[in-house]
Image (tube, rainbow, N blue to C red; front, side, top):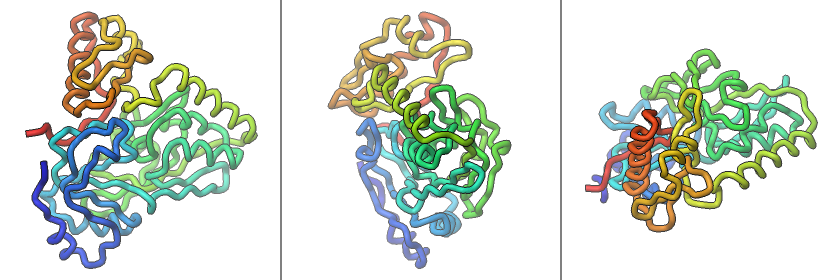
Length: 307
C-alpha cells in the first residue's frame, strides 16, 4: 500500500526545516517484530527546535504518530497515515549533571542510560538494562522492570506539543500509574532528567549483569518479538493467565505465543502484523473465557489494516 505523497507541499511551507521528511517509508525495519506497512510521511527532526518548527507549521488535520525504537510496537499492515515522527541522532545525548543526575535525549535506548549511569557511579537506574526500548517510550508508558519504574527516578521532562510549544513537565505532572502516564497524548517528549544516588561502578555493572542473565534465561530476547504483550492485571501475572488458558505455543499464521515466556508473541519468520495482533486477540479471548480476566494490551498498535 502507498499513500499520496504530500512531502513536497510541506517542505515548501517549511523552508527552514532541517530534519528529513520522506514519503511512503517502510516502518517494518524500524520495529522489533519486523512487520507492518509504510508511514505516509516519516519525519526525523534534527533537534528540539526543528521539531517545534515542524509541528507549528503542520496543518492541524494531519495526524501525528510518534515511534521510538519500535520494541513495544505493532505497525498494522496497511501502514500509518499522516506523519510518523522518529527521534534519532539529535536526541541521543547523555549528560551527567551534579547531584547524581543524568539528562538524556528521548531517543536514547534505555540500556544506554543504564550504562552511562553505571560509568558515572550513579546507582538506581540499573533496572533500565532490562527494558528493551527508548527513553521517550519509557516516559509515555512509565516503563519499568526488576523492581524499578520510570516514575521512581524521573525529575522532569521536556516535550513539544502539537502547536510547536515547548513544555517542561515535573514528575507530578505525568500522573503516573502502572505502565501508564497521564501526560497529554499530543506531547512529543524530547529530553528527560533522572535522579540517581551515589554508587560504585563495579557494583552497578554487576547488578546489570544479573538483570541481563535473568532476561536471557526467561525471555525470548533473540526472537522477533515486542516484549511483554499484556499488562499484568491487579494482583496477578499475565503470563500465568495465558498459560492456564492453554495458550503457550499457540500459533496463528507466522505468529506464535512464545514457549519460553507466554506473555511474549514472536514472529517466527513470515508473520504479518494481522497475524500477531490476531493471535493476541485470540489469547485475550481464551483468557477471558478461562478466568474471567480481560487482559489489556501493553504493546502499542498503530496504523490501519491492509485493504
